[in-house]
Length: 80
Image 1 (cartoon, one colour):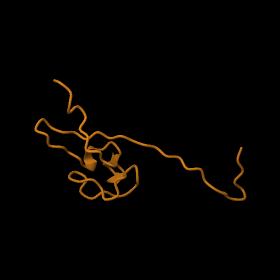
Image 2 (cartoon, helix red, strand yellow):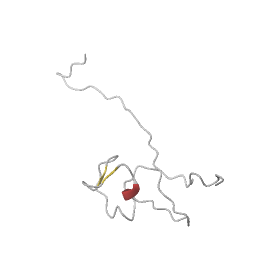
Image 3 (cartoon, one colour):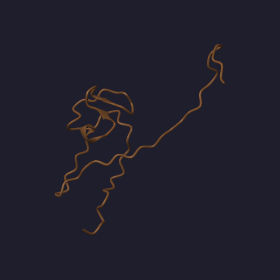
Image 4 (cartoon, helix red, strand yellow):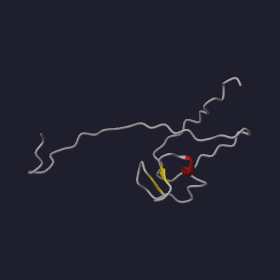
């Protein structure tokens, strides 16, 4: 069991990768906004990934959004 009475000498980093799917309507209009992200805290109006306050989450993504966007649209090549 670790003993931190003398302080912390170093840290070990842990990382995680998340994937978020944003909706696209039948006409091809995408809603890429914090409001559509499951990591957006509506009550606190903050991103739960970076703990930053988000301005205009119904319309935009936050300036400090940690997500990177590939431009891929899931289901685009699937036959209906």
